[in-house]
Structures are given as C-alpha cells and as structure tokens.
Length: 297
Image 1: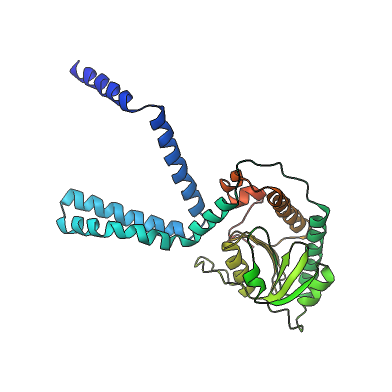
Image 2: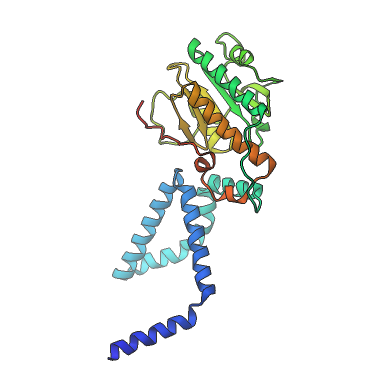
C-alpha cells in the first residue's frame, strides 16, 4: 500500500511540473536533434560524431563508477573547449544548413511543369553526353542552381554562348584546349569552360574507376546544390552527381528523366524557395534514388 501511495504521489508531482509547454519543449528538442542527425547521416562527420560520443560516454562512465578523480578533473577542464571544436569539425555541414535556411520561406508552392527552356537544356545535355560517351570523350558539365558558382567560373575561359550538343561535344574533343576541365552552365547559357573544381575529400571513395572528373564532381556537389553530369573517358559511363551522391551507368531515358526532375525543382525554387524544402533531404526533394559509390556495376 505504501508503494502504491508513493507511486501516486510521484505521478501527481510529475503532472504538477509537466504541462503542455514542457511537452512542446521536448518535441522541439527532439525534432532539432533528429534533423541534425539526418543531415549528418550521409556525411563523414557522422563517424566523427560517433567516435566523440563513444569516448565521452566511456570516460564519464569509468570516472563515475571507479571514482577516477584525475579523469573527472580533465573532463571538467576540456568540456568548454568542445564548444569551439564542434563548429570546426562540422563547418561544412553548418554552412550548408545556414545556406539552406537563408534561402527558405514559410510556404511551399506546387512544383510546376518543367519549362520549355529547361526541357531544351535537358535534351541538349542528354544528346551531348551520349555523343561523348559513344566517341570515348570524357566530359564534366555543371549546371548552376541556387548556389552561386562565380568563383569557379572565374577559373575557366569565359564563353557566354547557347547550350547546344555540338558546342559541348566540340569543347570535350580530346585535342581542344578546353577539354581538360568543367563546363559550367548558368541559366540556359554556357558561362565558362575549362573550369577548375575542388576534389572531394571523402575518404570512403575507393572505386578505382572514379577518376579526377568524378572526384571533382563530388567535391563541387558536396559544397553546393549544383547538378553535375560526368562522362567517363575510360568506361564511357554517364553519371549524375548531386549533394555528394552519384547515380551511375545511365542511359538516355534515365538521364533525361533525372535532369528534368532536378530542373523541375529548380524552377520551383527560382519562383519561391520553401522552408519545407529545408526540412527535407536533398534526394527526397528531387524524388530521385541516389546510389552509393560502392554499388555493383
């Protein structure tokens, strides 16, 4: 009976301090934690976070059970320093989140049908990629979206011409001076060719078939929302890269459908960026399945 009375007393005390505001507070904290973990799940930072969390939990457990005073003193001294190391470790992820938040608004418009200009752009990219693949040319084509790529455009040769399959194939012809680099498309025009892109720092890339073009496409996509089309010079395989993920071995139909899906989302964002997009994963916004780099050939 005493136990039952104690339980009832504890429940009554719990209800006294736990109201709907507390429930809302817990839900908000849980949502923020879940969102941050979702952002970090597909990056190298999640491995660092797991390692740091494991070391901290083991250290606190051992110091609490065994009463290790030196370890406890050390943890108390280095805990404030963690507040400064976290922004350094997760600098890229924090920058990506802040960039998405800065472009977001409070309502989401319906996705429009891809415009005629985007359809022509997709057809030109599909035709050029297919021709380069058939001829054994390597190609690296970047389509700018919301993030500004002026810094990378400045590293190449300025062109400002219409996007046509003939121009793209001629640029990536092996004997031309512009073939060794990336073509960056802004709007419906080629902004520059022979552009230098940053290489990916992802240590998980072990596929030897992924050369400098693929690593450069991954490096750019890890730091921007650009869509990159890559044609392998060795295997003639066509790939699409977005947000650090690669879809490989595409045929004409799949390539066109993927590009139109990206351009559809791009058209919607051009008209009105949405806060709801901020809380969605990049691959879910475009409704395109992303495959890991270790997928079977």
